[in-house]
Length: 162
Ligand SMILES: [Zn+2]
Image 1 (tube, protein in one colour):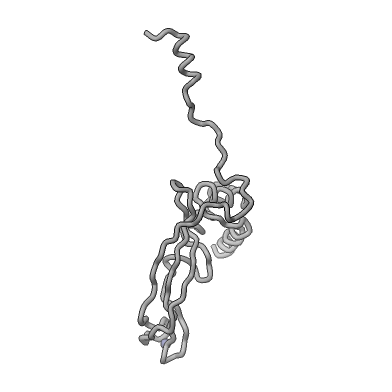
Image 2: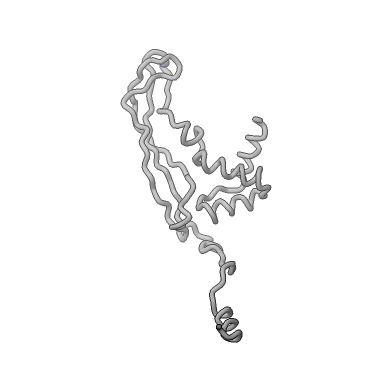
């Protein structure tokens, strides 16, 4: 049997879970000090695609690049940027310009992936977080920086739709 005195001594010296430790990036005011994003490359670059309007095969005019912010890596603490190279095409029949499809990744003109937008909206709608708290949560736990006004725009746009 272990004497009671020894037990409580060991207990006092043992590290305990639940100790509050602030996020390592808290208080950083310059962007340069934040962890560098991990770059991931994706290609949606095709020689030809079918015109979405008439179905005619359209050759590539040029490749273009777009950067999407994705959920980061909580283990390394680094954000994750997806660099998508995609092709722009022009239909020879109806003269329409279009891009290679990437609607599965992100909405047109949006700087964030569907994963980020979906999570941000759930934080507000399901968990009831205020916009600023949702923005901090996304950075602290998912290493993606989204200004709170952007989250507000997403939630309000979604609300109008449904
Ligand atoms: Zn066409």
